[in-house]
Amino acid sequence: MEHPERKEDITVDTRLFVGSVRKAMAVMEAFDETEPAMSLTRIAAKTALGRSAAQRFVYTLETLGYLRRDAATLEYRLSNRALLFARSILTSHAAIERALPSMVNLAETFGETVSWLEYDAGQVVVLSSAPSPHRAAVVLPIGARFDALTSSSGHLFLADMRPEIVVDLFQNASPSIRARLGDLDAHSYVDLIRSEAARGYALTEKDMDPGSMSLSVPVRDLQNQVVAAINVSVLRARTGPEKLQSEIVPALHALVQTLDADLFRGR
Image (tube, rainbow, N blue to C red; front, side):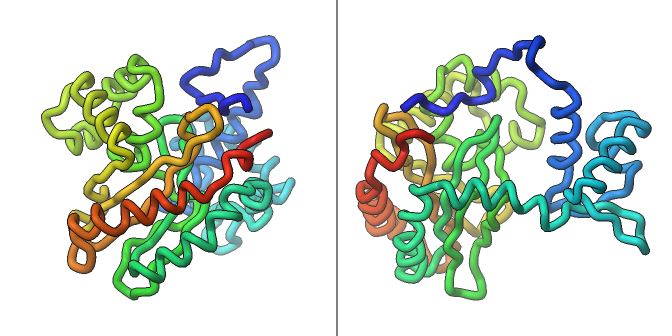
């Protein structure tokens, strides 16, 4: 199987590249958990498109049914039709389908949220999640995105990349991301994530909640390349570092070993 190409490795062929498609996708990607609804002015500003261009793309996407406008606020949001993309990804993903029952079992056994994440252009995205049965828990909704540099799952993907790619991401990180990385320089960071990959798991503090931790193990394909990560996000008050390493790490590794590598053929 050919390993999925990461965006850092892609060279654009300008003869084939359609810039207007990129702009349309920029409009759709502008909607997220922090801004699920936006005015035309805000869309234009967030996408760095001029107001006239933004208006044309928004009108087209609304006409096609991918955006809808609130008649009262005049703000736009993604429509249910946009879910067709997510449905196509998830229903064709045999590995997630096979892993999900075991993920649900782990979530019930340990009382913490278990998620499947994949890499996308400097971020990790949640593609499947088995929620904790407790009311007080870390919630990772499907579609949520986190910076790869500071997330445990991201560490595993980045450790599998060429060092120069990781160094470039590190050096171009936003001030808030650099602050979370503390005193590490780029090369020390590369050493850190490689040591985590060598031991078979990565453990970090959660970005949003200092009272929680994030543990991830890699899922590898037939070429031994990391194609996904399975993550357990825990509350410190309920699950401490000792339990994470003595009980949850072995359980996650056992789950990964049950995934048949042939599932990744043809992806």
